[in-house]
Length: 126
Image (cartoon, rainbow, N blue to C red):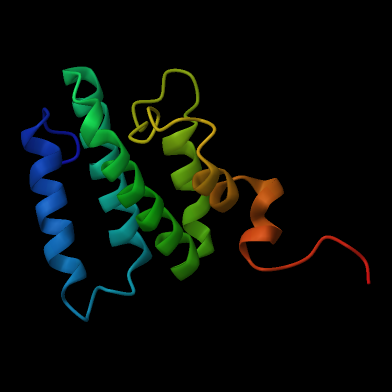
């Protein structure tokens, strides 16, 4: 579904993901949170390209929440999500690429220098 043409692809993926997160079996699934963030990332790009700027802040907040939840549930999802946000040249797995690169939440959660801050650690010596 995430590889299907927009908007049908991301709508289907988003609807399935949201339904799964309501099931107690899946609420703690980092993968579901990550792939749902990707679906919302595709929606963000679609709305951006359609000129629907009023929809972007709400979608961006949803992505922030899903990315943070995914990384909290399983820190191993961090590199995947970072690659969606800051993809390598030519990558087609770039679902979060249009989220502003100065997004404070994604920077804190996904970038290596902010890892300690996200985990509540301190970089100062006491």
